[in-house]
Amino acid sequence: MRLWQACLMGLALVASPARADFLSWGVETVNDPFSGGQKVQASYSSSMRSGVFIICDTSASGMEVRVLAGWEYTADIEGMEPKGRFAVDGKIVGEAEGRTGAFGQNIAGASFTLDQPTARLLAAAMAKATSQIAVQDGISDRPQLLKPRGSTKAGQALSACLGKQGAAHEDAQEAGQVVTPPTVGDASENAKRYARFMALASAVEEKCKDYRMIPDAKRDNHLAPTEAQAAAALLGGEKTSAKAEVNGVSCAAGAALTARFTNLPYDAVWKAR
Image (cartoon, rainbow, N blue to C red; front, side, top):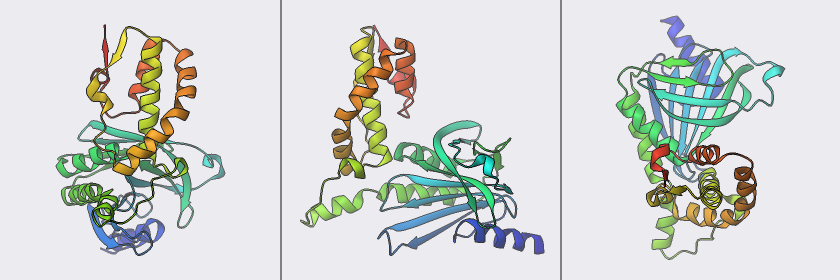
């Protein structure tokens, strides 16, 4: 009992104010006066020094995942850009580039920002998990294998939060308030991803006459209105670099690269003549 209490206290102190349940998922919802949104924090404590925290804010886009590796932070991982991978019941549901850092009492960890599509897939999968939720932080020699206990409630809460993102913009429009369109510098990761996807796809179609993108793949229903505007503003600038990148590889490699910027399977993006 004392060990269990120590685990909860230690992990809560080093990473997040949310309740860190030991070997099960806990979830907490609070109103954030600084962002103006509602924040949902799901947490899982594997030990006193390791665990996973997932944070969603209705005023933002997507989710943040913080993974505490459990060992002491050292200078050799400073500046690393680890790739995080997430799997539920043995099926990979997403990945994201991240950054390393020290949490609390110098505990090594990594933080990943998930765009809307990836975040939605992870949250929905968590809500239906039956055997295991696995997280690979890109800095440890093995993934964290988490039990699904409590994940249904946590996944549902995260999904509800994601569903409210972008609603503030729409509510303001309905109220007749003036909403300033986003600038390129303010573009979300989701908008940047979609602009990159469309720029690469255009470059592949221009170079490779045997490759044509499936029309439905061009529609992204996960973009909020402000994100769609930002993606359109970014697209022109992305086309030059995308064309150079595609011209330097084979058609097959260019098509595969394009598919990395969407959650659709490859055969739902491209059709060959």
